[in-house]
Amino acid sequence: MRKIRTIHAASRKTYGAPRLHAELKADGVAIGKRRVARLMGATGFVALTERTGTA
Image 1 (cartoon, rainbow, N blue to C red):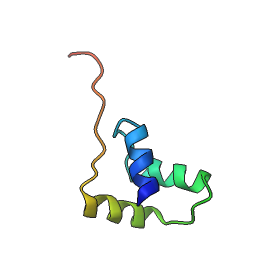
Image 2 (cartoon, rainbow, N blue to C red):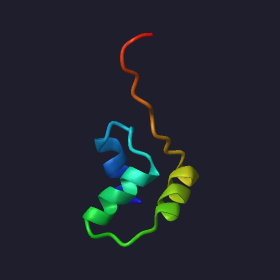
Image 3 (cartoon, rainbow, N blue to C red):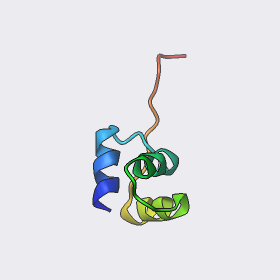
């Protein structure tokens, strides 16, 4: 959970479960994408969308 919190904060809270899973996998952590999503949901982490320009 500590690594998920750190990566999520470093991404300015824009990374969702798939990107977090990829980062954890690159760091050598063996964890499933669904487990990352479940942990994020349980702790209230939500990926923010970045707005680009105005329409």
